[in-house]
Image 1 (cartoon, rainbow, N blue to C red):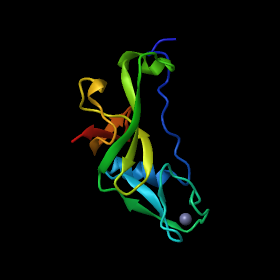
Image 2 (tube, rainbow, N blue to C red):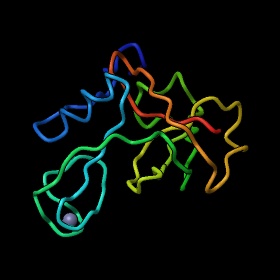
Image 3 (spheres, rainbow, N blue to C red):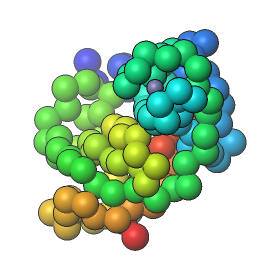
Length: 137
Ligand SMILES: [Zn+2]
């Protein structure tokens, strides 16, 4: 199967995650914060991962983040990604605390990436869906 035949894997919003995807489409990266313990998290889930409270609210991220870790794929494990090799997948920590899986854009070579590197939110489009990506400062 080649990239022309493989459907691109897109998010499937549910009742909990739909507001996250809606906010991204409007240019805002949001996360959830617990009203009981103050914990903040991504990806969207119905209960606080710290204290299991269901009392939480959405907050907008300011767009500041740092690079925690990354990998560079040189093999396409899904055929829809074959035409973008090599590409990176990164773990990014927002200034507000939540971590998310993302990718770093605006770089010519992943060899330039560094742990704790300062990043800025760069919302991009993936097959018509707004996604949270980051670029080095
Ligand atoms: Zn909590």
